[in-house]
Amino acid sequence: MYSHILLAVDGSEHSVRATEEAIKISRLSTESEIEVVFVADFSKAKDDVLHSEGKEALEVARRKKLSAVEEKLEAANASYYVTILRGEPGPTIVDHANKKQVDLTIIGSRGLNGLQEMVLGSVSHKIAKRVKSPVMIVK
Amino acid sequence: MSLREQWFSNVRGDILAGIVVALALIPEAIAFSIIAGVDPMVGLYASFCIAVIIAFVGGRPGMISAATGAMALLMVPLVKEHGLDYLLAATILTGIIQILFGVFKVAKVMKFIPRAVMIGFVNALAILIFMAQVPHFIGISTMTYVFVAITLVIVYLLPRFFTAIPAPLIAIVVLTFAAIYLNLDLRTVGDLGAIQRSLPSFFLPNVPLNFETLQIIFPYSLALAIVGLLESLLTATIVDDMTGTESEKNKEARGQGIANFITGFFGGMAGCAMIGQSVINVKSGGRGRLSTLVAGLFLMFLIIVLGNLVVQIPMPVLVGIMIMVSIGTFDWSSFTYLRKAPKADAFVMLATVVIVVATHDLSIGVIAGVILSALFFVSKVSKINVKHKLDAETVVYTVKGPLFFASVDHFIASFDYEMTNQDILIDFGSTQIWDDSGVGAIDKVMIRLMANKNRVEIIGLNSESKKLVDRLAIHNDPAAKMPTH
Image (cartoon, rainbow over all chains, first blue to last red; front, side, top):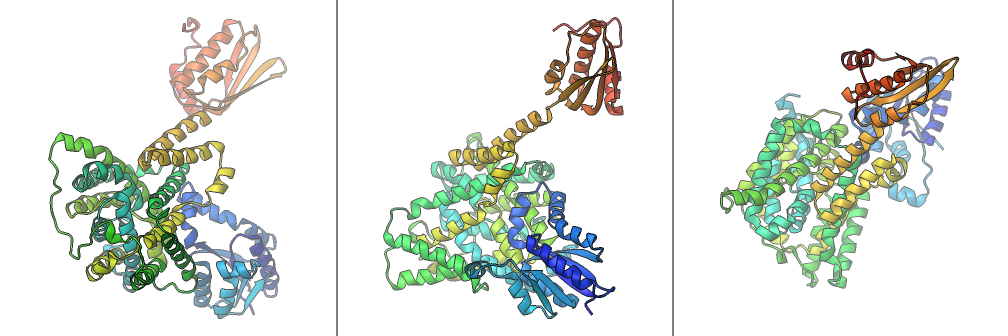
């Protein structure tokens, strides 16, 4: 049974699609709880700070990124909570998932082509390789 | 966090990250010395002293401070016209000014610097660092271009596969050996200054202690103090955000001052916190004060051991690394910002960049940017909107926006003074009266309207505004005449 579902999101459309799948799976059991994990990327810290009025504004901006995902979860009446982590997205999510021993990790794939993947690196690919729980990659 | 935790809660991570930072600092400290027009040792000694001192007195554990590009760029004219000793004296004075800023809690005021100015600041800094490289690689030789290009390829592609050692250092080691082995004709760091393999020692800068000296160095010290604190507090906020912890901004300001003050007596140039290096430190696992201390100590150790090699570093490799630093410093979201931000903000950002690039002085750009945004702010908030409509037999005026010295003219001009024998209602429900000018304006309007036998009523004043009006208004006084002006 999937009681602790980790849903990794970045605020993109892909993570909204992943949310839909997470909701479907959480309906399989009444005990399912979805942990929405958002990673504040280290390499974006300078940008984020520079473009926000202050600490509180930055917090709000990050929560806003999650609003589409949270709306979906609320509309579906799913039981969920949000965790905001800091670091490099891939390894940070892997560490967190393994430490918390989640039952399932769900993540959206950005659908990069070969070249983009070489330059940017695929977060979902890294997670799929290193997370110990079963992984669902939503295309 | 207790002092003990600030030092020893992350020993392994701090030592490893400190070593990585030391390796990444060397090329930058040398390159920034060259920008300032002094021997590489001035930047290296500064980086060593500042990093070690800040480890003890800084307010943001895990932040890296050393010789920086922003500070180096400010010093250029001082070094060119008066020489190294005046720079050291200016560094000491910079420290004193920053300590005062810290004591008088100026860090709080720095919070009010608008983000448009901060974005303009980092962009201008990036452009100036890039421009400072141009004379070192344009039109020198084909081999120079080749080495710059190879350096860029290494620093951008290598980290994809290997991150244990900073790529700039790998580029330096590999290309320095390649240049020596192939006996290539390239300019080296040694052509621009000497490296001493010794620890810095205490000495007094050789300047006359008189008013004239103060006159020369004070403007530079003030600019250095402002720019240094600006970059340090921005960096501290970034490290706060990355680590999800708080820091003491006034203590950091004081710490920067102490560090610069002492550094000046040990032959180092003024420095401040570095965004790039601090990000490297946190990414490499550095969190505590120990990481900063290790960075400084290991840097000095490397220079003493490898000093002979350092003078042989080809200039094009340093240029390549500085191009990477400028690309990393530039805020690439600025292009989106220009399109999406309010026009006034976009204008302030561009104006800050243009002024800095034109004057080569970051402090002038920042001050101009702050003044510009203050003016825009006043004109933005001084917009007051008065609407009127006829409700039954009564003319109703609805006032929206703040009423103060900058908005009274528009407020007074918004009423129709041709009316006679009318019932008039003025609704202040959506306005706030800030000062006596606002009260005076209400007064003036009332008296002029009542002079034509209109019956005027005021509603919706909030309690604060009402207090102001009751205290000052004279329009209820039948004896009052319209003020002459």
